[in-house]
Length: 305
Image (cartoon, rainbow, N blue to C red; front, top):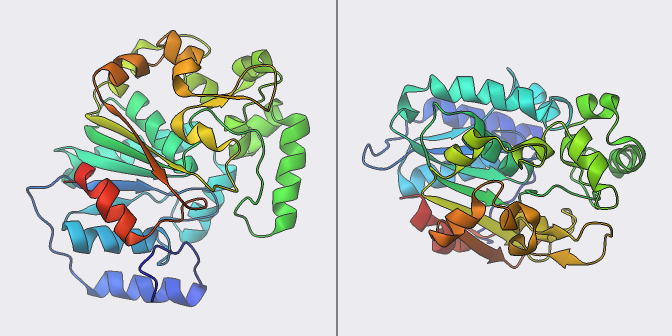
């Protein structure tokens, strides 16, 4: 039997998960920080073989309160939010929700999955009322994406439609307001258009102007842990998971974080954080978000206790 986190799910398994959740009381420790999770595209807060499974795994092994972010009032709304609710709106909603959760008032650790990674980072930078200790991002797209190969969706046709829309119209007002993935589409062949038209990523990366609050809040983190999946077939380029990206003007050659203007000009304070040993780069030899429980224990538990 594989000791792993499986992101696949069925409707029957969702029903079983909710029955267990409603009939089981989890005893949590008051000495450890709670954990907040934010799911990625094509997922929800609570599917038992994705974030629901991760929630139960963390509750049982670390013995803490775990909150998996749900956008909207149902699993269906939460699923759709990954495609159709603008990240700025989602971040505002989550900031308000978490700020009123009494169990999080003493601070918490946060884990983002795929696009939930940059959404959580935006939350750190924008929501000053929260006390986030360590931020862990799994397969995040911190410098955006330029392509969606094998995207997780209802069908391959849906993925193909997204790719066509993004290739030709990502920076139109319609697409920026309609499709979540357009808000972190980063065209290295047209950097100026990206910086002026991106309604989410260019802002949280301080590429339009320097928002000092973003810098101040990000540097409050104890650790910023970025996990890169070395055999990722969904995130393109995969180095965006470590804040790297294509060199401007082409889409072949990659530059690491330390070669980017964001780092060199310290537009987000990442250079200062790196100097203070606050940034951690981890690798996982798997496809997108494919990791075993043992890998998770060995590599991430130390940042969650």
